[in-house]
Amino acid sequence: MLSDLLNHPNIVPIMIFSIPIIAIVVGCWSDVTSKKSNNALKQSMIDRGMSADEITQVLDAGRGKKKCK
Image 1 (tube, rainbow, N blue to C red):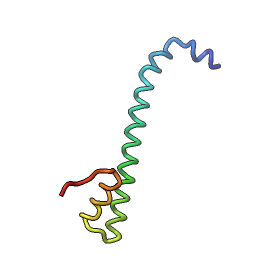
Image 2: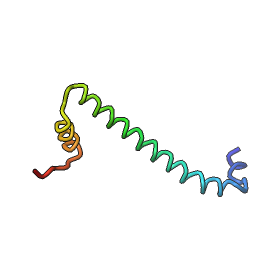
Image 3: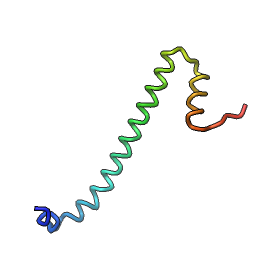
Image 4: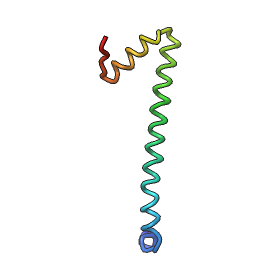
């Protein structure tokens, strides 16, 4: 079964085009889920009553960035 599939004449072009498309879709999906998680975190901080400055401070601390004042 697998050998028949690998001997199919169109398998190479199909794989050449499908692998990058799959990689792009997975990358976009990962980006979307990361943004959803970040937005949920921000919403939970807003629900707790944190100010915009406090939220920015927490998010910057998580990224390892330092702000100059």
